[in-house]
Image 1 (tube, rainbow, N blue to C red):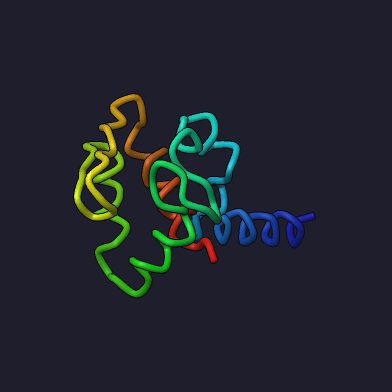
Image 2 (image 1 turned 90 degrees about the horizontal axis):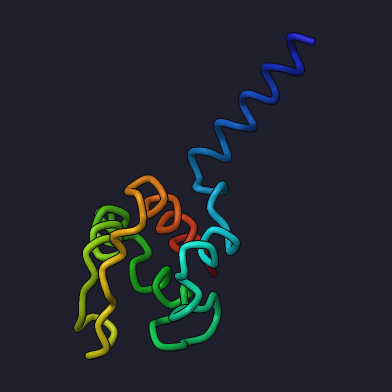
Length: 103
């Protein structure tokens, strides 16, 4: 029993640290999928393209969390991404972590 709990705790910690708790359902619930898709450009860039653009950048997560929350323009064209004030910072961070692991 104790061993099972330790294994479960280790698995839970691994998922939490990799952003695996965020998924397409969270992106849909927070209206991200109104403008973005995983593999194709809609109004905004595809999530896989965002992941490729920011791959290897140490500050990518914090930069993108700020952009998700505050909005922005110019990186992917002139169509602005509006601010997402309805998102908590924790949800924005979980979504960004998920986006950054897309292939």
